[in-house]
Amino acid sequence: MPTAQFENYLRTYRKKAGLTQQEVAALLGCREGAQVSRYEKRKRLPPLDTALACEAIFGTPTSQLFAGIREAIDKDVEKRLLELRSKLQTRSDSGSKGSATAQKLRWLASRVGSHAESHNALSS
Amino acid sequence: MTRKTNHKRILALDIRPRRFGFVAFEQPDQLIDWGVKSFRRGVNAVRIPPRRKLAGLLDELSPAVVVLNERVLRVPKKKYKIVAIAQEEARRRRIAIRTVPRNALKRAFAGHHRNKDEIASVLVDRFPELAMKQPPRRRPWQSEDYRMSVFDAAALAATYLGRGSIQNRAGLALPQSRDSFLGIKYATAHAVRAVE
Image (cartoon, rainbow over all chains, first blue to last red):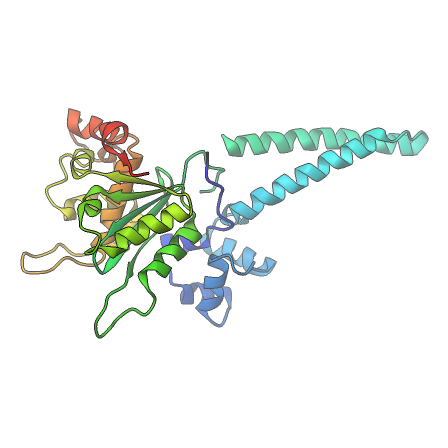
């Protein structure tokens, strides 16, 4: 059975860069390295500005740095997209509402398909 | 690391009486963590007990397999308490333990197994991120550098993962002798032993 991905790979990228936690903290604009340690140990979730700063520091997309979170979010969103599609499919609107629903369903069909494809591409 | 992995995360431990080196791989070519943890006694004693250090590492990395050197399991338990602790903690978390015998390691690094420095150089060629940890060449009158534990653990992991020849992946122009090329396959298929 494959192992689940880590919530984040900040430690791996930091070590690959040869930086210390204090140095990364200074680059992030934090006061101390302990905050970086908390992010690395998954005790705290970094705010959006810190996540984007990590992307800028390591030159790696946030989705790769926070691969585990991305995977979990992908799954949740996919579930909600399917829920929305089944909800829209049960509707019986007519006129402009009906065409709007049809447009949403078309978009959802492409979205769910592409989502599944991207998910499969990641899995392979 | 960046893609959803189909491989198990493995943690290789090089256990010594006063420290252990560790290396974690997520895929054969994806090194995710490495380092040395000490639990020395005496004047500069480390206050955190080895069990807590090891448990913390296992919790943090949550590997599917722990790889050990076969030699450490042959040492009396009274002498190497840390080995018993490692087995106990892994068992508690239902993590499989695999051992790599010395001859499998030799075969995996055929042509480079003259000494540990050579093996470390091969590993640094393959994983440049380990270069920072590479100790200077040991002189006959010196004791082994503590950082060598990382390379011993990495060698164990590479032997266990054994996908193709280390030398080939390192891009070194070496003759593909039967030993160097098939050694790792042999190590994986026959020599790597399950403890549990």
